Length: 163
Image (cartoon, rainbow, N blue to C red; front, side, top):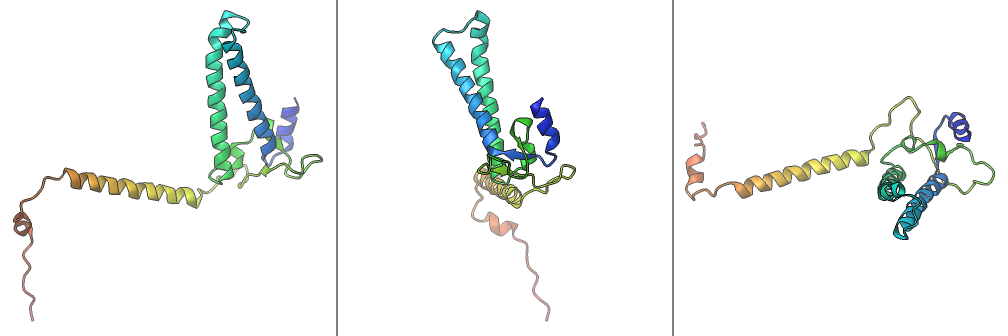
């Protein structure tokens, strides 16, 4: 109920870094507890024993994906609105007791789309250039060697210039 209220209160979709990291911490602690129970044979049922490894892997995969998204937001490669969720919602203004929290604000309004960053665009160009160079090297490396006179035979004759 509280999360629903927060979701409607904050239309600007501001993310609290403190709340996001706390949620990731709780998820990792849960994976650790499951792994400990499994290692010590303390799982309550046989079904829980079967499900625990999959649960640990799922928690770790989700946490990893969330951390990658957080990194992209911090590096301005993604908009903070993609990271926003009710568990990390906060107000755009500082509230009592959270003045030291880092707020990740959306760079766009909810209806518009963000323009791609120049870093991302330049990265794409660089990748294409590197791929073109690799293709050129492969073509040169796989090309059969020509005989010494072949170059002269394929040369286009040049007509003399008219005065």
